[in-house]
Amino acid sequence: MKLFIVLIPLLLLVSCAKKTKESASLFVLKDSSVGISFQNTLTYNETFNPYIYRNFYNGGGVAIGDINNDGLEDVYFTGNMVDNKLYLNKGNWQFEDITSKAGVSCPGVWSTGATFVDINGDGLLDLYVCKSGKPEGPNRYNELFINNGDLTFTESSKTYGLDVEGLSVHAAFFDYDKDGDLDCYVLNNSLKSIGGFDFIKDQRTIPDATDNGNKFFRNDKGKFVDITQEAGIYTSKIGFGLGITLGDFNNDDWTDIFISNDFLKKTIYI
Image 1 (spheres, rainbow, N blue to C red):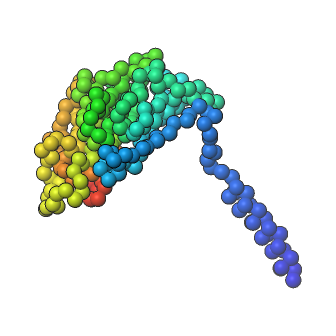
Image 2 (image 1 turned 30 degrees about the horizontal axis):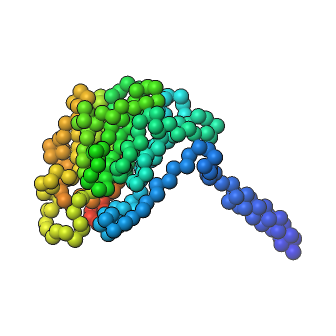
Image 3 (image 1 turned 120 degrees about the horizontal axis):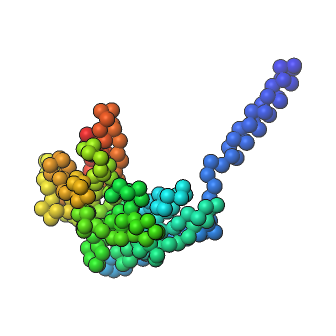
């Protein structure tokens, strides 16, 4: 009986502790009062829908980085059928929409992945935006926005050699050859339907003749040179790329690439 009396308060203490731990939230949901109200609204019709474009509902992208070096993280959203948005972090959970001033809306085109990266090494984050969707429009190619240091950007993808045009999903920047500058891997999705061609042995090793496969660029003094074949990157018609992860997977102090693909095998480049 004494044992039973001692156990009761112990059980109550454990129960209360567990309840307190479960009620403590790790995340707090913020609403549009912080100044961010972006919505990636999609509307399909007879000429453009999930049946015609299988990645219709894959979503947009987001990039987070401090574009003005004030110690606060700013946010960039990409839209598929709506313009992209850049929100400046003013502090104390307040954001300002500076898209128009910054010149980074990418109107009238299907944007996907976005990456903040200091591509020219001037200490300011630049912005690379991938494009997909319908193969049309004046700014259908991937765009590179160079940070001018005054909350405005200048589109310079052609100058740098990164005006890739295809079903681009995302891009990753890293110094693959350790020469002190950033190189670029652009992940694309195949233009072909999954049932539109026959699967044959070693199909993934056959380069896409339309030049729409994945791309790998070496940074040569600010000009990006396509070395996809030289680097051993697969560029076939069955490259249904979805995501990129960088890491030193074999601990040899060199950056490796993990590619996730739709339908087919994942790929690791060591």
